[in-house]
Length: 488
Image (cartoon, rainbow, N blue to C red; front, top):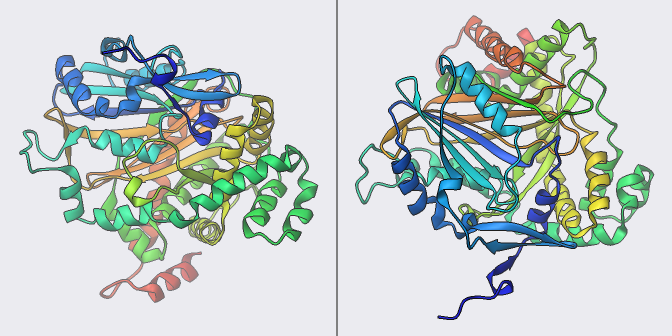
C-alpha cells in the first residue's frame, strides 16, 4: 500500500480551534488540566491499555497541531509513542494532598511539546490507599464540555462492567437526560449565525476592538448580535485589585473537599435560585473575605468573571473541537450581605441568559482564528482587561465511576485563563458532591487555598440562613421571596 504524502495526512483546523492554539503564551498556557483521585491502586499498564482502546479511539489525539504561515492544521504523528504521553510519576515526602497540588501546579506551569500531540497523562500509582491521575490536554483539541465527555467515556459504572452497562444509559436513568438537554440545547439553531458574524467582524477590522466609541454606529445597524458586541466593547476595564495585574509563568492549583449536592439543592430551592447562582455567590464571598484580609478596599467593588456557555448541538455532544461562547458575569465583591450578594448574582445571570453574548464571543473567536496573529494579540489583551477570572461549572454523573476497575473518589478540572486573566474558578458536580477548585497565577494569588478555605464558610452562611427559617411542607417561590426579604 502506498504511503500517504504529508499533505494527504493533514486536516484543516477550524478557525475557532486555531484561535485557541494561537492564544498560548508563556504566562498563560492554553491547557485544560485535571486530576482524578482513585480509591484503589491503578497500574500503568492497565491505564495504557484503557487509553489505547478508548481515548485513542478519537483519532484527533493521534494528531499534532501544525502551524504554517497564517493557517493551522491537524497532522497524523507518524512517530506517535504512547509511552511519551502516558507516564509514571511519584510524589516526594509524605505524598499528601499538598504534594499532589504542588505536582499539578508544576505541570500546569509547564508547556506541552509542540512537536507531538498536545496531551499527557501522569499516573501516581501510590497516593493514599489508591492512585492519582493528572492530565493535560491543549484547548485547541476540544473545549471543556467535550473533554469531560471524552474522559467520562474512559470510565464505567461498575468495577467489572458488563457488555450492556454503559455510562450514558445509567446516567439517563437518573436525571442525566434533563441535564444533558439543558447543557447542549441552547443556541443550536444560531451557530451558523454566529459563524457568519465572525466573518463580518473580521471585515470590519481591528477598529471594532480598539475603538469602543464605535458602539453607537454598530447599534444603529439594527442587529441584536452587533449591538451585543457594542455592549461588550463598551464595558469598562475591571477595577485594579491584587488579583488583576501582570502575570508570571508559575501557576498554583488547589481544590476543596466536596460539598453535599443535596444540601446545595435544598438551599437553592429555599432561596429561589439555581445551583450555579448560589455557588458563584459563594465564590464572590470567598474572594471578598480574601481581599479584605489583604487590606484592600472592597466597598462598592464589582469584578467580572468570563463564563463559558456551551453552543454545541446535542447530537455533537461527543465530538471534539471548541463550540462555546463567553459571557461576562458580575461578582459583587463589595456586597457584605450574603443574601443580597446572591440576589445580585442571580440578576446578572438573568441578564446574561436573555442576551446574545455567547454568540457574539463565539463569532469573535472565529474571526480571531482568521485574523493575523498581531490582531489576535491586541483583541485578547483588550477583552481580558474586562475580567479578573474565568469561571466554569460542569454537571457530572450522580453515581460513582470506575477507571480500569479503580473507583473514582474525587475529580477536578481547570480551563486556561486567556490573555491577562490570572484566576480560574472550577466547579464540578460528581457522585453527590460539588467539587470546587482554583487555579491562580502566583504573582496574583500565591496561595489559592486562602480562598478555597473561605468557600465552604460562605456556603455555610447561606445554609445557616435557610435553617433559621421555619418551613411548612414543600418550599415554593413565595417562601424563597419571604426569606430574601427577611435576611436580604
